[in-house]
Length: 618
Image 1 (cartoon, helix red, strand yellow):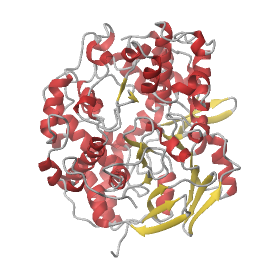
Image 2: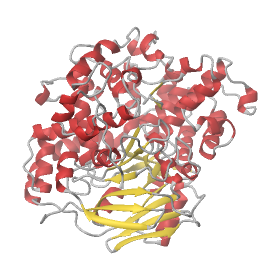
Image 3: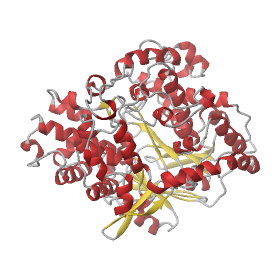
Image 4: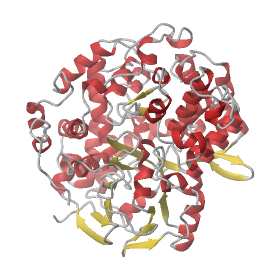
C-alpha cells in the first residue's frame, strides 16, 4: 500500500519481543479499528480463548481511522480483552488525548500478551518502543503514576495507567488516562488484565501528523456541522453530563435506592446546576473535541475531574447520598484507586439493601452500618474495594460473586446483566433499553445501543425517524436497537464520541469522513454492514463461551417491579416480545445464535459456532 493508517504493535511481555507491522487495509475495511479491530484480534483465540487473567489472553488498545484527525470528537480509543468481571467479551471506550498521541507516534493499535517478569511500563515514541521497569511507580495511585511517569519520560507525554486496584487484579478496576482529569476505560475490569501482565502503564509521546488522504474533502464534510457543535458546547460544555440528572429524574430513569424508588428529592441537590454553582472551575475536553463536557472541580485546593452523570446517579441516587461534595470526593477516590464508579456505586447500593434486609450483618461488614445515604459507609467501602480489603475484597469481585457468597434472596436485589451492573438508565422508562441491555455483548450497557437517544431527542431520517420515537412503545423497538447497536459499534471502531449524534452525525457523514481519510470508496450501506459484522463477531465470541438466549434477560426488578411513582409509575418492558422480533431481524436462531446464512453474509464463517474453527493465536 502507498497509504497506511499506521502500524499495529505486537508486544509479548513475557519474552520482551516487540514487533510492528503495517495495518492490513483489508481487515480495517471490514472492522475499521477500535472495538471492531479488537473483536477481530480477540476472535483469533477461539474456539477456546484463554481465561481473562491468563498471560496468553490478549489486551488490546485500539484507535480508529478517525482518531486524532480534524474530525470533531475524534480523541477516542477502545480497550478490549476477555473480561475478568464477567468472563465474556469485554471492552471499554475512552476519551482523553492518549489515542491521538498514539496515532501521532505512528501506531493504530497495540496488542499485548504475556506477563512481564517484573512491574513494567511501555514507553512509545516516533523512534520506537521500550519496555521499562515500573517498580518505582508500582503501588502508586493513578494521578501520582501519571505525574511520575511523565517526569521520567517527557512532560508532554500522555499516560494510560492502572491504579492499586488493577495491580491487585480487582475485577472492577479500570485503565485511566489524562492525569487529574481521569478519563477512564472503566467497565469490564480491564485494569485487572493489565495488572495480571505486570503492565502498570503505556506512556506515549508522538509528533507525527495523523495520516489523511484528502484533507480538503475532510474539511468539506465537517464544515456544515460546526454550527450544531457550537450549540452542543453551550449545553454539554456548560454543565457536562451532570446536566442529565434533572431530566433523567423527571422521566423516571435514575436508579434511586438500588432501583426501588421512582422519586427522590435528593436529586435536586446533586444536579449539574448545583455542581456548577458550588464546585465548578470550568471544563476540559478530549482531544479534537469542540464540546468540552468534562467538569473541573476544586477539592482541597486542587483542580481535578468532576463526577459524570453515571457516578452521580449510581453512587448518589442509587445509594441515596445527596451530599454533592462527598460525591465529588468519592468520584476522585475511585479515580485515584483505579476502579469503575458505576460498578462501585452499584455494589454499594446492593450492599446497603442486603444490610437493610438482614442478608448481611455488622459481623460481615466489620462493624460498618450500611444505612442508606451514609457517606462514611460509602467512603469506607470505596477504600476497601480499591484495596481488596474487608467486605470490599468480596465486592471487588463483582455483583455475581456477591450474590453467590451471600446466597438466599440476594439475587433478587442484584441489578445486572451477564455479570455487569446496570448503567444508570432504567428500561422501565425506555423500552428500547430493555432489548439493548439484554443483548449487549458486555452486559447491561446503555452505550452499546444508545437507543434511548432516539427516543429522547435525536432524529435519524435515514431510518424513517423524523421525530423521537415513543419511549414506551413496543412496535419497532427491535429494529431501532439493532440499527443503533450497529451504528454505535461503528462509533467505537472509527473511533469518535457518541455525543456527535446530537450534532447531526449520521452514517452518510461518517462515510464521508472515512473515505476522505482513507481514500476508500465506501457507501453508507457498506459502512452499516461493517457495524453489523462487528456486533455479530462479538456475539459469536460470546456464543463460544456459552452465552445464548438464557443470558439475554433482565433482572426481576426491571421486569416485574413497578416503580409506583415518578415518570414510570406502572411501566414494565415486554422483553420477550421485543427480543423475539430482534432475533428475527438479526438473523439469529431462537437460541440467540447467528444463523449460518447470516454468518456467511458477514464473512464470519471461521468463527461459526456450529462449525468451530481451529485457529491458534500467535
